[in-house]
Image (tube, rainbow, N blue to C red; front, top):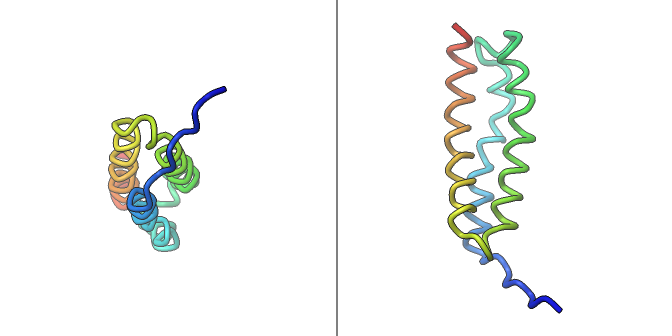
Length: 92
């Protein structure tokens, strides 16, 4: 029988939720100047799913693999910046 894994700490859960809050600005992201370009609109549509999956995977893997969870959260934070830059600058 496998030993039970420890639960994810509450502080990490709070950090993960806080890093998901930029999704609340999705209506403004959809109104960005370049948001209606063909390639940009696809990335903006995939963005909420990516953030949700990355947050869930980081939360799930934290008890056993701390470094991987932090890497996922850092990549999520970088994707927030990248999607906003893409929405305002578009594909050149």
